Amino acid sequence: MYGFDVQSRHPTPGSQTSLREANRARIVESLKRHGHLTQVELAGATGLSAATISNIVKELSAAGVVNTAGTSRSGRRAVEVTLARRQGLVAGLHISKRHMRVAISDVDRTVVAENHLPLASDHRHDREMDRAALLLGDMVDALDASVSDILVLGMALPHPVDPLTGMISTPGLMRGWDGVAMADSMSERIQLPVFVDTEANMGGLAELRSGAARGITSGVYVRVGNSIGGSLLINGSSYRGATGRAGEIGHVMIDPRGPLCACGNKGCLEVFAAGPALLELFRDDPGIHRLRDVLLRAEAGDSGATRALADAGRHIGAAAAIISTMFDPEMIVVGGELAEAGELLLAPLRHELERATIGTIAPTVVTGMLGDRAAVLGCLAAAIDNVAAEWKPQIR
Image (cartoon, rainbow, N blue to C red; front, side, top):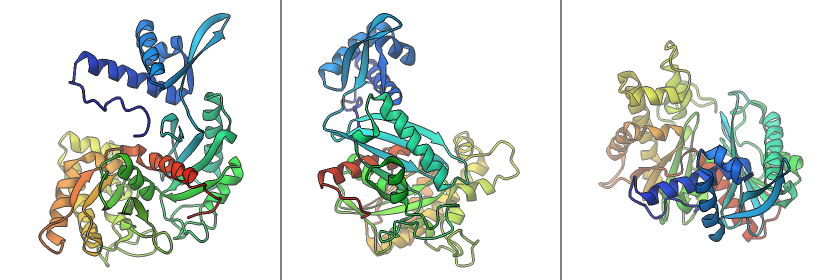
């Protein structure tokens, strides 16, 4: 697992054990965000009492989850707490259409720092890579480390990267990102080895290692949010194809007479089921500005929002049926922001998939377990793999 798994014993909700594990999780999450805190600062950050903090910190220290050390703040002695890290650090960077997430872990997969920032819809590669480099520096400073302590950085992007050139495979999909060797560009900023892959491939890898796809030998991971990406999961890894575009379900054509897609083709799945397509349905509604607003409306029982999600599910099911016919996977894992709709999306998706799949048995369809952290956790997992394999600076 990635980080300290406070839910691994499945305690009874409301029990003393459940409460204590929830408190442990609050402490660990605060340390991930801030890097290092005194016990007094932890009490302020979590809202827990000083006595509770002291007892849980002792337990976590004995378990090797945190380190403690004496320090002096404002002339007073204090106990400073940091997450333990062993055998070096790796980093993950996920830059999506609307968000950036950075995480740092040790090679034992303990996440020791994590941060998240919103991005403008038309962000440029140079500006966001500069921000990522600064954020990474701040995060390692908070860990009393330096960027040079990081062994390798894995980066996830919303579109396929050509393994030969290191550039976005299909021009025009992201403003200011065409013609840029992405791994090289980030490596120049932080002076570290960097490798890059799609957010779908990274998310799929994370779900394989510690999520909904654990234990399967063939599957498809579909990430649905402001864009739609896919990953073909075969024998424990993602299959990328000759130019890095394998599994790109978002650009499967489901209606040749449909609207023009940013990729240059007509009728791709993205123009019917991705975030911008759903938001366009509500362009005259002053209460809906983000995909999250549509999800909240549907959860509240709004018929228009519910219908929009159901239609998106059917479109995704139609594209998934094409992939399933060619690939015959055991399972389809749906992740990304739109997956939070649950059965409002998955039920019509399954119905269409079952209707259009050749044969009598369609693949199992489940929601991903790792949510919007899947891609950055996949970056960390891939980075650890590359460290173990004595990674050399090139894109693979």
